[in-house]
Structures are given as structure tokens and as C-alpha cells.
Image (cartoon, rainbow, N blue to C red; front, side, top):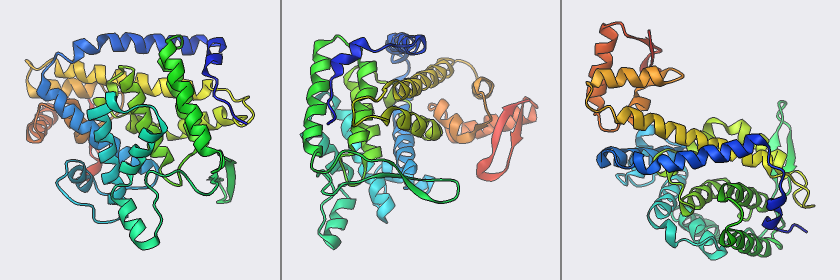
Length: 356
């Protein structure tokens, strides 16, 4: 039977890579106060953009999607869901907003996790119950589930067998209790504990549906509760989406031997810490661009393009420069193109820009 003894993490053999990653995140958090002194209006735009990115990315990972326009309208509550996918998206929006606004009051306890899951299915659950009589939101799975994967030939195989439906309530109680004990004792860095909690949650797989999205919501919640606020301004979910294969590889590596208490948390820990570092670096990059407000719009757009390691789209520029309107950015791009400082790649929605 699986046990959750986070005290044993005190004896975990941490590689220099992991130690350096944790130290890097500590340094980034030390700079947060400086970042948050800049134009509040710009920061609010970053928050809104991150909400849209997070909601879209976390759902796309699960094959749930809509158009960019509808996504933005749903997150901004300017439209009502039209179909099942949009109901799922609206539910994620509600759960994420709850974490943004009330993270200090959401405890790491089974009842609060069940409440978040219920909010996630606020729209979908009502319609599903109406037609099937099944209440998914806010309830643990009633039947055992498995995590399946398809190989290159289209054959389906079982990658992992989570905790049984019978054991799930006991496991969730123990998971939350041991995590809270470890946090209260303040002997183990939260950056070590958070990845372990998320991995254990995913291995329990407590819900019939929504486990992946809940794991990402809980990651944001646990980071906020430990005063790592970067997820408010940069979408953690978007980075996970971009590194999806690495996510599944790390999850597989760290879940092997989980039931027998012989699993190694370090691969998943290294992956999640890497995601957090990527988010902080993105935030620092955007802060650098936003702090140059005295320069002209074309100069700021050009600097943003130059700092990017890959071709930059108009949507990315809008997120990097939230205080500049879309029309102003378009004029700046035309100016830079005319001055032959940048080159346009692709056409239509796939248009991107690079320094010449």
C-alpha cells in the first residue's frame, strides 16, 4: 500500500542540477517585489492575458478547444458556452479565478479540492447530470480507472494503474494530511514538496475526469500559498503545453514503482522546477521590455523581437507589451518592415517576425 512519508525527502539525494534550480527560483522570487512596482495597468493586462493563456492551454492538453476569439470572450465572461468544450473551458475559468482571488483561504484539504473540482464542472456537470443522472463534479471516482497511451501503430496500452476507487478517499486524506504536516514543520523546501504532492495526486487519479486540469490548478494554488506568484502573470499551463512530451516522460519516470513506495520523485521534480524557471525568465523578459516605456513604440517592439529566441507573432508582442494597443503594434511593425530592421515570415494568422 502506498504511504505518503514526506519526511523521507530530507534524505533525498539531490543532484547539483536540482539544487541549482531551487536556488535560481529563490533568486527570481527575491526580484518579484521589484517587478511588481512597475505600471499596475501593465501588470493587470499581463494577468488577463495569462488567464486566457492558462485556460486555453490547460484544456487543449486534454483535447478541449475552441477558437481564439471564443476563448477570449469566455474567459472575459463576454459570452456563454455553446457546447461541451466551451462548458469545460468556462469551468476552468471559474476554478482558476477562485484560486487567483482566494488562494489564502483555499486549504490543501480533500473538501477544498472537491470544491475546486465541482467548480471545474459547474457548467458541464449540470448538463451531464440532466441527461445521465451522473454527478461528476466534486465527487471521487466510483470505478477504477487506468491511464492509457497509444503507440506509433495506434495500439492502446495501459501506462499506469492509479489507486483504486475504494482506496482513493483514504489516499486523498493521507496525502493532504502529510503534505500539510511537512509544510508546517518548515524543514523541507516547498519547491521540493509541491512536485511530490502533484505527482502523488496524479498517481491517485482521484476523479473520473479532470485529473490533469486539476493537477495544474493545484500547482498554481500550492505555488501561491508558498508565495511564488509568477503564475499570476505568466501561464504555467502554456509552458506545460509547450513541453508536453517532457511532462509525460517525467511523469512516467517518477510514477514507476509508486504503489510499492519505490518510485523516484526527482524526474518529475526536475521537470516542474524547470517549468517554474521558464515562467520566471519569461516574466523577467517581459518586465525588461515594459520597463523601457520611455522609448518609442517601434523601438520597444524591435527590442522585444530581438530578445526572442524564436520568430515572434503579433499575439506574442501583445502579451509582451500589454500597455501598447494592437493598432500601435501593427503600425510599429510596418515601420520596422519599411526600415528593413525586421523580416516577416509566413502569412495570415501564422505571420511571425524576426530581426533582419
